[in-house]
Structures are given as C-alpha cells and as structure tokens.
Image: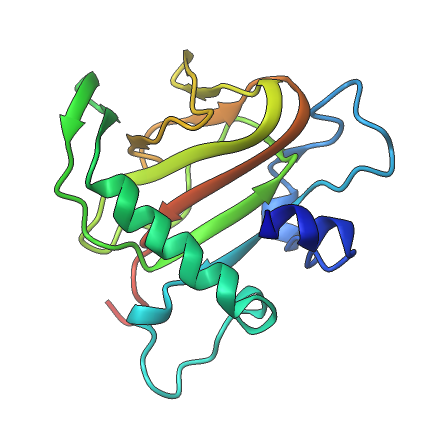
Length: 183
C-alpha cells in the first residue's frame, strides 16, 4: 500500500509537537525500535481554496490525499456504527458531509484526549483502522470499539477517546472538519 511505501522509503513527515504530546511512546510493546510511529494531517483537495497553503502531507503525497478522501466518500455510503453523547448506534446510514481534514497515523497509540477545535458543521469524526495488527481498539469514554477495517463515527470533539494496546503494523485514518479561522 501507499502508506507502507511512505514508511519503508523513510518519507513519513515528522509529527507536530501538539500531536506528539498525546501519542503514547511504545504503543506496541513488541514493536521493533526501528518501526516508525507518527501522525500527519492532509486536507481534502476538493475543498482547498485557490491560493490556500497546503499542509506538508498534501505537498509530499498528492496521490495519497486524493485516495484518502475518495475512501471517506466510499465509506460514507455504507452503514456503520456511530457514537454520540447519547451513546452507541449500530449500523446506521450516514449523511456525512465530506471532511476537510484527515489525520494519517502509523503505529500511533493515542492517550486519552478530546480533539481541539469544534467541528465546522460536522460534529462527528470518522475513523478506520488499516494494517496487520491485533488489539488497537478505539476507546471512547471507556468503551472499546474494533475499528480494524470497520469505520466508526464518533464525537471526538466532546468525547474522550484513545487507542488500546496493539501488536503489529497499525495505520488509522481519522477524518474531521475543524472550526474555520475567523468564525
């Protein structure tokens, strides 16, 4: 996959200090020290305004950015689980608008946190796990959810969430729309 090639070729961008502060070191106790761990953000190429600065992820990996948001569109057409302040709903049909951003994560075990910002017309984030791994569930307010090849919507802006321990190669994609500047 393109994600594996980015890691293998040593092209994975450095994780920002803010995001690094919520990534647990050594998420996989059996992971080799040389195995990469990190996160970067890309923006939806279809929603970029003319002249808007692109994040490094888009500049380095334009093909990945297109594929990631195409995957969001395809996943949004399926039924999936949803977690809100009201609790969990299984297999609902989403009416999800395209997200403006996606966090692309590799072997990142996040500590309990609430996402910063407020959704711009979209209160729910969507996550899916990819790769060859065991464990790595998404915990939301203490309840665990298997996201391996199973998309899940959740209110990451209000509900505390984190990554469970895992072994193996774990990628995750988290689509979201932060509050726009100047609102």
